[in-house]
Length: 524
Length: 111
Image 1 (spheres, chains in turn cyan, green):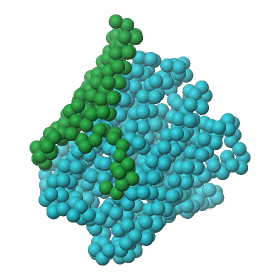
Image 2 (image 1 turned 30 degrees about the vertical axis):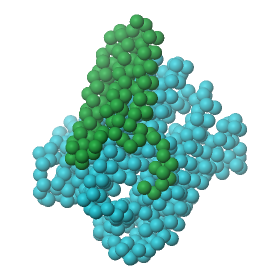
Image 3 (image 1 turned 90 degrees about the vertical axis):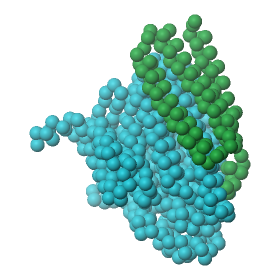
Image 4 (image 1 turned 180 degrees about the vertical axis):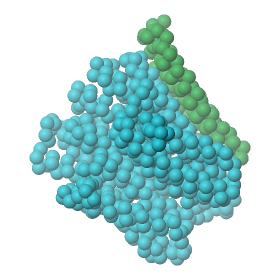
């Protein structure tokens, strides 16, 4: 008991990271092993490390409250962010295990993945620009290592290419490695923009961390425009929004299907965290630049939404559809920021909207992308029109696909409704009660951006649903078999979408389940 | 040497780096262009640190950490490229297009 009492003050965000790094240290002893027993041990050990880190994260905050030192800071917002990071890491790790359990490099993948999770948590809690920048680059380095390793371990050849296997493999590898190199050079390009922006910020204001920036931004606001422009470009390039999507769509089309999940679910998290960090700073100065910011951000939302949506509506390539759907979901973060800086929503609601976007990604989007991946792996085709053949044989997969699509559209009683409900609420309010304190032109610009975003989103999901259900049935596709773990995965998420959707809907009518109002919980 | 000169020279380097990175298809040239942006940021840090704030340990620490991390990242990309270069006998280290080249077929096409 004495030991536990002495340890209690040390349970803070570092405790979470220590558990993950301890797991890295242990796995280093077995990194070159190819024994199946050790692979299973490393899998269980990593799962336990993630669970331990999650519990430490929550208990540490409940016991000791907020934490801050020279380099790092952690409050309720960071605790929720870390929880999201750990949940997403957990899900991705299971996907990695399912697809790579027979790989010789599984323990290496496991080790690097744990390290990348720790780097991402460091990034989330970093206060000083040094910690912020170093953790971002370490995260990207480990992501690069993971993707290259996963693409090395599997050769995936599409049947539609029609070449002999040897030629296809060489061609596949050559194209995959060029696209990986191009993508990470583009990422490095955006990271260097952040580095250059930070150097200018240092020259203009001598700010060394986000708290100084937040407190002193109103004093230096006339000189910080250029810095924020550089940061804005860096974020736009990092996300790869239209028309800078080329490296991103190429890498997701050419690497092994399971490695794509690292990009879709993991790579964008630092971008979301960075935008959230800058939001309160932009909010402080927006009174002077409101019209410029509104016009600029509305343009970004409309261009990005239209670019991603047109790609989804036009292409039949499953990977391209999924990649652009992810971009569409993350465009929602820019819309959330816009609503926040014009005071349509308060800071709590803004954060909740961001979290609901992440929830949409990991609960409603994941089953759709998983079905696409499994179809591609089992049938060898990468065309949405081939889905019907799979659905004829597998009714459960069909049910999972339809439920996930309905949830993504935002229909009540499904999880995705929590994401669209707020946007629909703003639009409804604007048409019936007017534009609060906003001038007519910026106000209607924002409302038009929200309407365009929702309309395009719904159109894209409807297109996916209709094309999936009305394609051509091929007898070869009907033979495609899904493994039992994959089916369990799809069943679990189907259940989650319905349960969370109903809980949220009941919460809106003030009907509490287990004493909790799910519409007010700022998690989904 | 004054602060304006430092700012303009680093901005010039930055712009050269940005345009060159977006223009070239050759991987070596892109990496060298990225060095221009990196150098511009370092000139800013050192210049502002010396002229405005005296010698700042924070700025020097930031530069050291950035040099280590960015060079490690670049080294990994180059190592990956070179290792695959020999394995798959790709004839040259060129991309088919520049970094953010926009092609309608890449955007809307099925391939």
